[in-house]
Length: 296
Image (cartoon, rainbow, N blue to C red; front, side, top):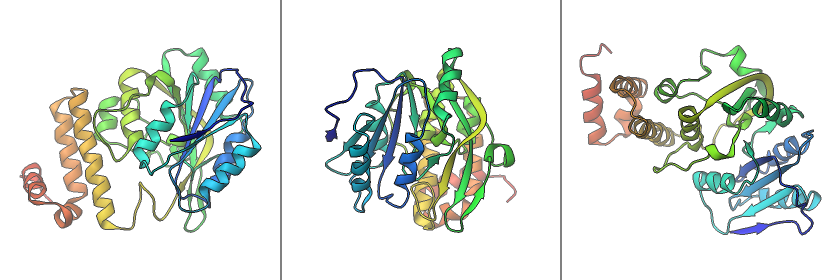
């Protein structure tokens, strides 16, 4: 991997590392980068961007900002495509700050004091390992902006503080708003379709997590992305991959058997038709076993 550093980078160790991964996001990466650069802090922070071999102009835009802010930005340029999971961990493990914040290249920050607020809380609450905030959801296809989603749509976006409940019923917890202590970053022993889901579960198992009600970020919901697709086959691959991660976490954290049974039931009931269409023989057999006796 080629890494572009500045010759004049200051020797002052950053308190916070902001990590951004991107791939073919030329339409959005400028807004994402500028949301980080506008942060007003009384501490130094580094900004690490990793472009995973984009085939559009994303890399050129990142290089432009690197030239403008050589003392602030570190640009990682893998020589071959790593994939979203490996790019995620490679970038986060390169962070040197006490705290790590994360934002993907199609999301962006709207609060210039986001980092300052989160650091202030973490510095005064040593029992807390992660602070996340409220967010807006932008429906890119029609421009609709859903504001303060955790507050206005709590039924579909519950706040989680319990490991078993989160593993059983994973929901979107706005990784673009997170700040967490560097020592909490651990790469799991299994592959997952959603690295942030596994990381948040790990943090719940190790530390207290605090929700800051301020709305600091925008999550951009695209018609087609790693977490959302109009393709039924891609949707099947994601939901089945997420289910596999849930089962791995049940074993890893020795969660009660009733949690596994609840995950099974929710998975097979929710995705009954999808699994019947794309699942292999073993999946169909397991689905029949899990739903035996249920009134459908």
